[in-house]
Structure formats: structure tokens, C-alpha cells
Amino acid sequence: MFRYLHLEFRGLGTMEQFFYYDLEGNIPTWFSSILLFLCAERAWQVASAARASGDRWHRHWRWLSLIFAYLSLDELVQLHEQVVVPLRESLSLGGVLRFAWVVAAVPLVVVFAIAYLRFLMAQPLWTRVAFIVSGVIYVGAAAGMEMVGALVVTAFGFQSLPYAAVSGVEEGAEMLGVVLFLGALTQARARLQGSTPATTPSVPPWSTRP
Image 1 (cartoon, rainbow, N blue to C red):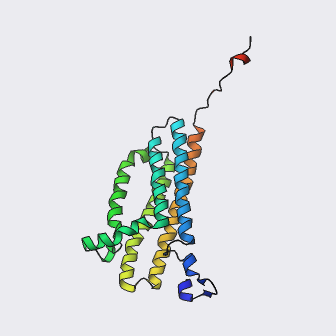
Image 2 (cartoon, one colour):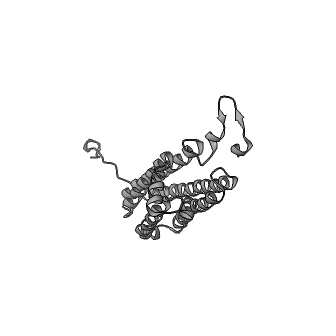
Image 3 (cartoon, rainbow, N blue to C red):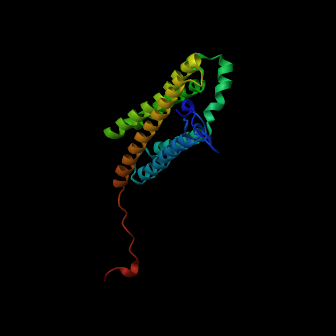
């Protein structure tokens, strides 16, 4: 919106650099990165609680934490953008696959879904539903809306209002998916911490009753 209203502030240039979601190193980028890192931190706590309670899936929780830590880093420095041009040129991609990183990302998502299927089915119903809904929203926005954005860019260009609208929907839906997942992780942590067996404090020998 700042781009099309041409709002100028002396000494600051345009507000676009601070708030436009399709740029790097600005407020939306930091916000998304922090959200993803909170998910990583929360999943690590869940993994620790799961291990303490004897939950067999504690390693899955740990790996989930590492995956979200990577996603947080990727959101901050745009690692996936580095493969766009090499993939597009080597595979002669265009149109819906103009942003060629989705070609590598979609198979990885499928592998992740298969690897975590049993883990997902072992979770309580509410956690399972929350994970599925948040995952569909996040992946649908990140990959699905990215492909829609590729078509819009081909038709109207990067500087167009339609592309700005698609980017806004994409980033907003990604944030929504992460927030929902963070809530599900918080519930999972509370559940597992509540099931952690209480440890019996050791009694020093001099305090034993005669």
C-alpha cells in the first residue's frame, strides 16, 4: 500500500522498506522469523517433556524443533531463494514454476509427511487436527500462493498491485499457520509436562527417623 500511495518521510525514504512483506530484512520478516523460532523453542521443550515422561516420540519432537529452527533462519536470510535461478535455468522452468524452489520443497514436504504420519496419528485428536490445519495453511500459503504469485508476476510484473495482493495473502496465511502451530505446541507441552512422573526426593541418612 505504501508503494502505491507513494508516502514519503524525510530521512526515511519510503515506509515500504520497513513494512512491505515481499522485501527482506524488515519488520514482517523479523516477525515471521521470531514466530518460527518460538515454534522451534517450544518443540524443544515438548521434546524434553516427552522424554521425561517416557513418550516414545520424543525424537520426533526434537527433529521438529530443528526443522523450525532452520525455517526461522531461512525466513531471515532467504536461503531458499538461492536455488531459484539455478533450478529455473537448468530445468527450463517458467509460468507457475517461475519461483523454482517449490520444485525442491514439495518433495521434501511429502517425505516429511510420510515420516511423521505415525507420529501424527499417535497424538491426541485436538493436537492432530491443529497440526494438520496449521500445516495445510502454512504449506498452502508458502508453496501454493507462491505458484499463484508466479503466474501473477508473469502477467502483471513484480511492481503490480495484483502481485502485492497475492504476496500479502501469502505472508498473512503463513503467519496464521505458524501462530496456530505455536498454540498446538503450547498445548502439547502442557499435556506432556502434566504427565511427567514426579520424582521422589532423596532423603539424607541423617534425617531418617529412629
